Image 1 (cartoon, rainbow, N blue to C red):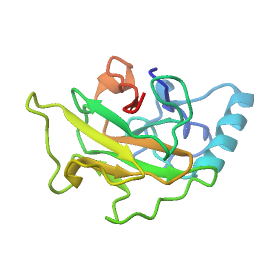
Image 2 (cartoon, one colour; image 1 turned 45 degrees about the vertical axis):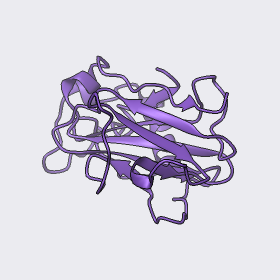
Image 3 (cartoon, rainbow, N blue to C red; image 1 turned 60 degrees about the vertical axis):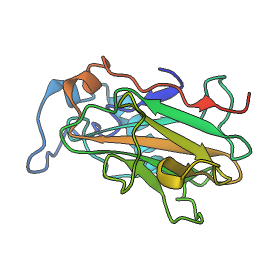
Length: 179
């Protein structure tokens, strides 16, 4: 939706052993054995030992509102209105491609979220995050630095509301500012 891929079941591949606190719930179980193998392989590539969706929902995107690869040669905005509905917290973290590493940057910021010090809300209460390689002209408060090349941000939502799990809440597209 809007260029984002919601991975509600990326870590639902284990039917043999449930850790303490894990829900044995059909909504968080992949019963197709072939699909479980594919999901486990994808989870291994993206990072093993993630949480089940009721603990944390992860969405990622590689593309902007025009369907083109996100790249540091452009400037983007992500306007969250409303911000992700969670019982815990949320964060948008920047990763380089193709290696998916955190991105070294001049303000040592690797994510922006509801706990970011100094975050500035829009007058209507929404939150606009600027994503760019170059420092924006506006204050740094809502800047998520990107690498010079291609990148992929991940939005993590801890203790997601049922609106996230049912897909009633969707993340807006990452909008290219320099059309």
